[in-house]
Image (tube, rainbow, N blue to C red; front, top):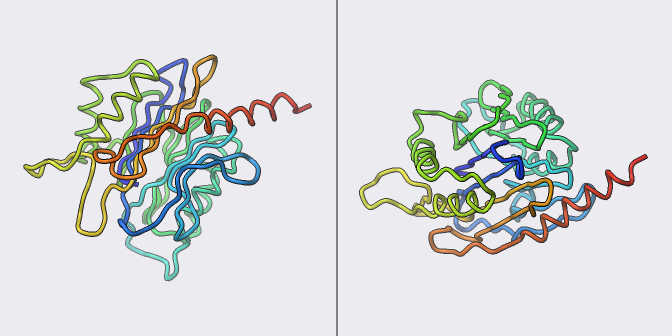
Length: 255
């Protein structure tokens, strides 16, 4: 994951609004988003090389995303960070997912990573490099790349924050429209930092925008299966609505 933007609890209709561009080797295969087998129900794409994922949402409204980060002391055979992301999506709350991420990263089995865990009750980032920290997130806009969350020194985070501030969305539709434009910001001819990256063998390979909603506002899930400045977003909202409906049914059936 290259850029992850969370607009948290800024809208009563949608406590979790998230946009993410994934950066990876161009030849590394991945599936399209789909509802995965098992319980709880999870909507995510799958990295076909390691079997994990980089972003997903489950029936409880828990959203988990992962970005890489630097770490000086790497394990000899690091466990897949994407597999841990997929395991975190089995948790019933974001707080539970953050606690599991903290415990796993403290084992030292992983290369450097950031895990963002959010639902309507809480949100946090677990930062795992040479030390492991949990940072609770308050309501507002939070941006994560391959270092610290909300790092004002990060030029790409600064670009994204300034872009969003100029057109701050106050509705779900506004968020989808504005962040789609942000995520499509392609390489700059003058070398200025933007969002889509394109190198010789790696770069931006996909983009996802989602809204976990409450009340009558329908949940939304858009995905571009390629660099979004060249690939249109497809609508997978019905799948996310099915996943969240499964959670509502399980809650209603509980004694």
